[in-house]
Picture 1 (tube, each protein chain N blue to C red):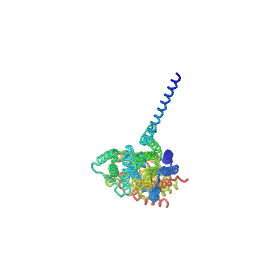
Picture 2 (tube, each protein chain N blue to C red):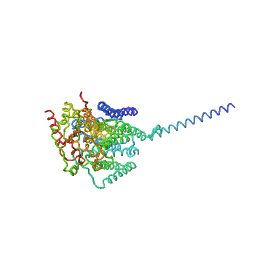
Picture 3 (cartoon, each protein chain N blue to C red):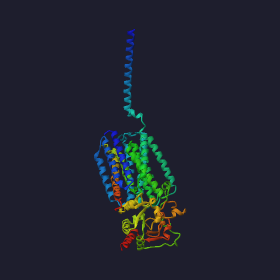
Picture 4 (cartoon, chains in turn green, cyan):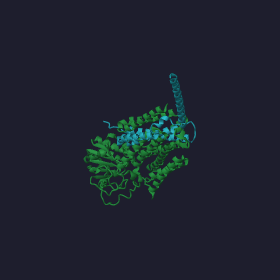
Length: 464
Length: 140
């Protein structure tokens, strides 16, 4: 196969990838889009095997079979609640692969047509070192993110004095090493660069707290794309450049959406120190404020007689594995003629769109699930708002109290509903450690119990 | 008179032949030099590969920007799954390293990279497929 023909096949693969993303504009078209993505990948791999002058099929097949079966096994077994960890782990693999490909290109440049060992083109060296650096940051950064999400290490931000200065110094050192490597074709510089950026990846992610994880995952998604693009420049391969750019911009847009959902600037998330689980510190203060507590029967009675119920699920619902019981409850209400809708905050869950997947898994039809901007104005004509496992995203002080740490964050207008049912394990404050005035409002009834247990109890009363 | 003209014509013809021989020599020389330095003559005209790559890169960012903003927020998790899977197209670079026929350092690096990228390709597409197959419409 000539290189021109191969380049055309790579173009076809790139278009397949674009169509895969395009398909995600609607659930109906998304599955077709995914098939384009798979076809694109198959075209890319086969084309590459055809243009290689000599192919070591044993080695390649071994890699694909081992890797493919591990990937398949993981993907089939993973729980949907653990999706963020999985994605973080997968990002780390892309990062490491980028580092290894850069190393291979450095030691065997002739195979890539970029020169001879010790005499590699300067432009290729720059591209290679940037690809390796971003890859290494993605690798260790994703591992730290994985460990935080999986609960292997605390989700608390790790901060120490002079942290930002240290990171800045290491960043400058990275540039120095790249210059050294390009000027001297030095293998020492290459490996020092890899080591340094591996360290940098850890240092960049440790100060970011658990609550900011949706941003971190999107950001690492973006990095893995830029790393692929960097390698694409090294190899002079447009497919890698295009795909890297697509992935990079997708991750960047998701990071932006997540930041906006939390009213935080991207910069302040990166600098970190926020989002620790300082729940105990909050809450205090107004302990004499009274709240109304209800039982499952009261909730069942209220909702059965309502015309319209909006359910606001949060990550706590997923932790309690309450989504199936919740859907059962909603089904019974629908049978009674109640209109049921779900309202999703952009940062509900631990990664972008996580809550939608969790609800879909529990067989909630996607056309009953609405984004915050679509549904917010409907709360004023809603009889019952049913908050389950969410807290900060319903906090009205984000709109009214400039002193509140979450002031300015877009929230769901739950307090406008006639009645608010708030399922909560205890009266402790939310993830951000902020007290929620909604608890003490007249129309609010607190349902203090485990989310799953409460849903099951409501189902029982509805059936009775 | 006519003899003089004929002599002049022969002279001119000889000069022309000498010139053409010189040109041919030059062309051969140029081809040899070109082959030795490994730089095809055509490449001297167009932009460098870096600039071509940069053009493609910037245009692809624009495409990505517009396509991704049209993704419905409900499908942001599958979007991550898909982008994760397709970013393992880096396997192309890994295949080149692994497939040279030898078993040196670069081949081992390539082999590991092929394995890692394969985990991602199969795992990424499959988990996205699982997610997407759960999204169902209301049954009426």
